[in-house]
Length: 126
Ligand SMILES: *[C@@H]1O[C@H](CO)[C@@H](O)[C@H](O)[C@H]1NC(C)=O
Image (cartoon, rainbow, N blue to C red; front, side, top):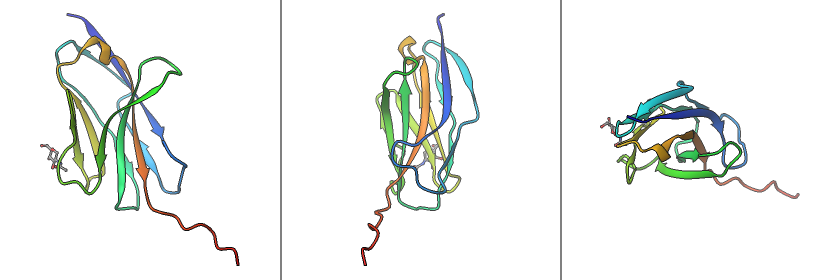
């Protein structure tokens, strides 16, 4: 049975960095057999209550980051996209990614990202 390797890295901030953002992913690398389920962990820290969480996939070093799933923090249900789903625990600030029925094309580097979307006031001019 073919084995695929999944790498997880952090941190990644898709937008302008703002203070107090942290993303932590504990497993550096994992291998799963084709058709198995892979579960990736991510915890984050933020003081905001309104934010988006993403999992991105990068198939080649230096290649494009492909967003695969987005969880909105206010949503009461776990986001699902095709074979991907999240386990979002807002109180624990954790966003697991579950890849069902793994395929060889899933071998990639995965990034978890936090995007705070507080509207910031432009600095006053006088
Ligand atoms: C996501 O699923 C997990 C496992 O079923 C559950 O514990 C958690 O509460 C769910 N999160 C949301 C936001 O529904």
